[in-house]
Length: 624
Image (cartoon, rainbow, N blue to C red; front, side, top):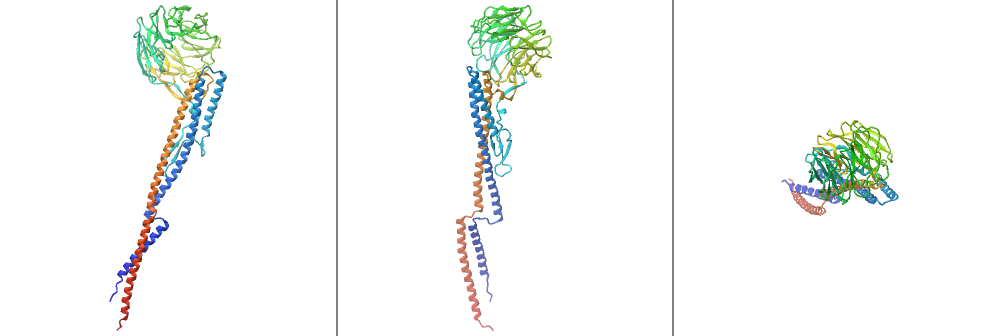
């Protein structure tokens, strides 16, 4: 007889399996971890690394947020300083301030400027200067991933780079073709319709007309009127206010010995007054000033008969009969007006064609003048002359462009009408006119020498002491010439542009760059307040943009921090699911297995009893 143990063995195996399950549940319940394999452990390890990287990334972001908050706070303080500086600039525009009051305002202005720079220099976080331009770019790791890097940088808030102004470089844009021109093609620019934008008027000798073009402030223009000449060639044009209405008028001349005044209507159009005949201005030069101190603008010019003519204004758009105060037999050119001897009375300065030297006549204050005096030695036909304060001493100096020796001779005024030899600009070749402006906005007069038989001009930057830098050549690229050019800010960038004259006129826009303007941060004179306001407005715009940029960085970092926290929560949940014990489920499993074990033990015991009973019976049998 054979006794089988198969059932007993199977029960024992199930009992062992149940015991292992119970032990596993006890391990999980005691450790709180549900990991049961190397794969589970690897998965949990990866999630743990990612979670810890995100957590450290949040700390990195919080450090960066502290930096941006500090920078934004300081930039806000600097904006407050700039607003106060602007208030001082506006206050300094009041012409009734005394010198002492201006000095007090300037002292406060300089203190505000010093505090602005101190804030820039002292803003520091963890040893890093934030806004002095040395911070550079710092890489911020956001979550431990090599590709999740945020570049943190701050622009410089140094006073030298914040207080700037736009200046001309001496270079100009490609020509922008304009309407107008013709044989004479003399241009004049002014704001004819009081909209704050420069307009221009041109004398078109080919069509015998004068054309009015209104500017849009962006270098473009629209023609609004044509003034027709019924006599002869349209020779020259200039601007003044002859009826004292605060609106600019035009004065024009024709080759057939006549001039006309056209009264401005305030909208860029003009109403023509009756022509004044019997006078013949030459070289297109008018002097429009109040020579007899009656608050009416007068008109003076050189005529074709060798005279300088004076026509006193009546203040209603009409002029008195012409008188002459110089009749030397030689042709006077390019008369200029200014206070040469510092007595507060306007004098006349002019060249004399085909003679030795330019001349000036001191004014008497009533529209008459004293005997003319010469300035300097033989200059060889001074065709074009100017009165300008070349050396910034407050006195008007003499500039004479001489056609026979191709040079500009400068004589410096001592303030009383005595002139001494100054700089000579040579090697000009063919030329015909002296123009001037402050192209690079350094407060010094620059010279623009127009050439009549060439499509180029020469630009000389002034040094402010009566001397000039090396000349720059301005190429007109075949668009007109620079003889009758007009100058002004035609695109509202505060830098001087010019319009060439002749048959194919064109607008040339100055190339610009930003330049340090700390020297303009003062209110010692009323004239400087406009530049100060421009510089401070530029600084306000720059710091505002910088503060906005920092705020943008701050917002991006906050978003990155929120994203990290959200990802951390999701990963923590996934990690919890992967490695944490589900107490309820595991406890139920433990109880189930414990009950199962008890049942298995009972069954196994019963199986063993049965086997023992059989063995006992077998033992009672006799042995043969």
